[in-house]
Image (tube, rainbow, N blue to C red; front, side, top):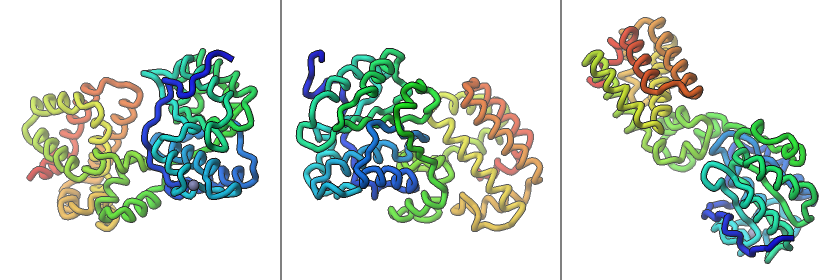
Length: 354
Ligand SMILES: [Zn+2]
């Protein structure tokens, strides 16, 4: 075996906050599968946690590490969260639990080699060693080949956990050596209940849920937490642009396109608003609105707009979202969208800023 480092420099230890599996929401099936294995003493040597970003794959991997190393006993299927081992894992300080993140754009062969060397060593102080590979799909081909060697004959004390949002991007040879555990997007109801449980008021929680795509990580991000105010700002800008005419819309498209991170969020805001116009138009039920805090305004706008125009606009917004995920030019797509809105729902939306 090549030179062995006690703490490979490529291994990144970010302080997470994990309190066993009980912190996870909406992943009961995945957790049940993991806990059954732990309880029966039949943990897989390698897992592949697959599912969208921000829904708890990393938390679950750390919770698995806690359960395997908890000092409360040998037969526990969940970490206690309070023993020294659980706390060390929570703080990212346990020498037997390591998280590997891509070094830049890719997970590199050197990182995987360092991991392979460390895998060969007995646990330093815990019962099992757990290696967590974030964004496993970002492994280079050489890194994947190196990992394959580790996966072929892992020592009994090792558990590897590969995390990915795109399992199809991983070589089949790797996938076939892992037990795949599927993590699914969280249902809107479960996420809503979770947010309300954290003290977020009902109306605001609804708005956050509509814009977080079933991801707890996104729902708790600062951008989404300030959803109400960023929504108001965006709708106001939009209303002003529509009122001021074509030059203002071109200018607005340029500004919106520059903030790449927010483009998707602004489109979700717009989609939720148009969806509300449709809901109130066809049902009159304000309790079904996402933007309940602005229900009065939604109802007033819906009254002045034909249903077909609302539906057309909604379709255009969704087309724009799809286009952007396929790398359409943001500025041109937004220009196109804004001019189409101008032709359809402008008269209603202008009032947003009133
Ligand atoms: Zn513990």
